[in-house]
Image 1: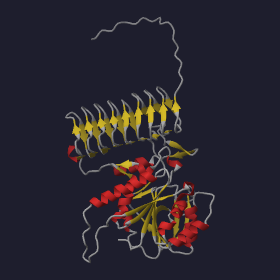
Image 2: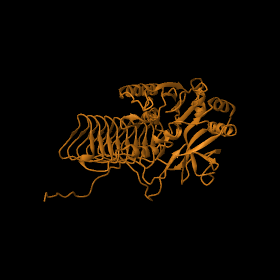
Image 3: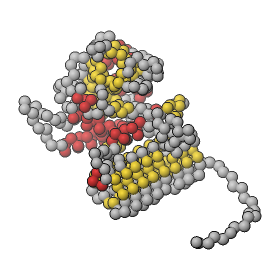
Image 4: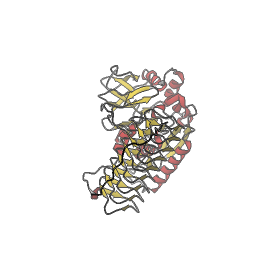
Length: 458
């Protein structure tokens, strides 16, 4: 377990414009739990029991709810067993503090400064909601020494993050934020799981550092490297950055159920699940409480279907995550997509898409997910066409959206929250929040001069 007095600071305030129209990635629910809950559980497993969540005004209530649920979940666990030396072999209940970051534009630096009073000069582990790693990554931070530690991952292709330069013994000499493809000083990308042995020095460096870019934290680290030894902890397991909307699909794939076997025996069912005899369900599949699958529907794993969702007659779901209280309507196909809660489809095709909460698609509406030239799909991020690295990508939506019948969405388009999209149109551009979208068409009516023959049944 970490030494007494160690604290963990989980940064969850950012409303990254790069993730739009996804409002808060921390709240994305996977297998029935918000994403941030998994990070909390990983921290408590290795013994961090004094944790602060830094949020913004927009999500403080959500973070309080997460803290409350975490408290209930840990209270239900059996008491920790005693080790040979009398110590606990498992961590107990975590004490979680909620802290508000009032100036979200100040980024990571502002989040840490907002927690200055709570940190109180103690050694601190800092984590970002942008980086998801396996539990074993935190094992490397169980018993840190006098050196600072930064988790790092070797990459073979460019990632728009911070890159580390290190000496032979792993001492960090330099951090360069977003150097640009071809200008990387090394192949080591910084992952925000950082241990600071001298938090007072970190706070002072943050206060003394100014930058016209969004790299105050990294610039403050660079100043610290001259005074305090920081080492890179090279991590070789799974790392899932959540920087752009399409990264949600990468996260989804990791959370979907896996099984060494397939077929009906690889199905996990909750309470009250009903599957029609003519339906086909091939695992690995998780069906949460109250799921109903009607006649001739096909569910091809890996798939998760949330509480009280309905898969209607003739529907097909494959490689997807379906939220709670959804209706995958008659004749609809959902392929490799993340579907939020309370989503309704009606004879639709939803492919390689990320759909928010409370979204309804009119009959016949489809999402395009493949360019005609089958090249990589580009997405507009703050006015820049960013290559997703994916040849298949549908749409990304916010919450509270209604779409009319027979509407087509072009690949890689983003649909803002609280919008209505009219019927019978092709949506080939991003739609801002709060939009009402419709297309104009003109009917030409003239006299019919052709004869219409009768048809025989046979």
